[in-house]
Image 1 (cartoon, each protein chain N blue to C red):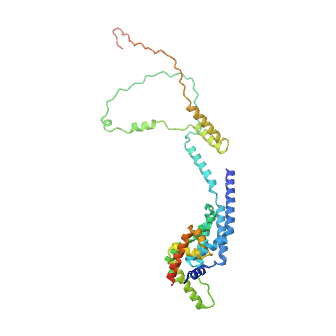
Image 2 (cartoon, rainbow over the protein chains, first blue to last red):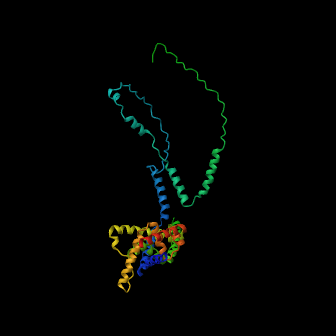
Image 3 (cartoon, chains in turn orange, brown):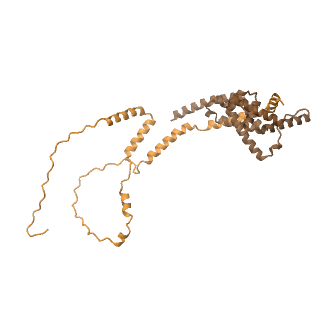
Length: 185
Length: 178
């Protein structure tokens, strides 16, 4: 068997045509795919919406539970209450139980007394309005760049030292308590 | 937001329409190529049609991701070849592959049909015995009058490599068929 006859034989073996309905079946299947694709919501629309939702959730999470901005209470002139001397309890000797095992109460108390980290609702509101401004194109982000540059320049400017007024050191004379005659306190 | 989504949808639609048109124009050519590549592996008309359909659908689904459009034929050939090989492997597990005979068009003479069928079966057994690298070159060179350059383009191989592989393949086939 020479090269040409082998080649011809392979070509003949592969010269098979698909059935007549094959083409229409392929077209149908492609059309189905096309319909599926067009029905699908484009992900490019979802991505920015999702990003905005994440930002909104983050902002809401950092919002304090109180809600509205705290109002500074007005100071009303009230007469100072009479001072009542607070009795100082005499120090007691430590009981054996307290010496044995130190309680965890002070640590817990300390943790409770530490200030809670809160963000001022006004700051949150300002940040949200800033984000809304950018989204609604009320704020031009290119202006911000110029503002940042100006702030950077002012920060890097040389700090001038203010002249300190020359003050004489305050001299406090030693306190002397005059002794009362024959009496005690 | 609405404007943005409309704009995106618009660009997407325009791109898809262009791709769809391009695909539609060449669908007949693509489907025949995919069918023949699949047939070159499975040698069963219905199975080859199923595989070709599957590969065309797969290719269409990922068409928008293809950067070089002129590489589509090569891409389709590779997808089809892979699917056909997978199908053949699973079919080998399922049925006794040796018992199947390739499709041979019936002739007037029954004995002639039998001889043709036998020859075809021998040829395909020899092709199956080739390593995959030589086998794909043999099949692609045997369909649609592909020359060495076209086979090279389809397989992303230099023409010289295709030539040497085809030479080796035919040499082995001759040995197996003699």
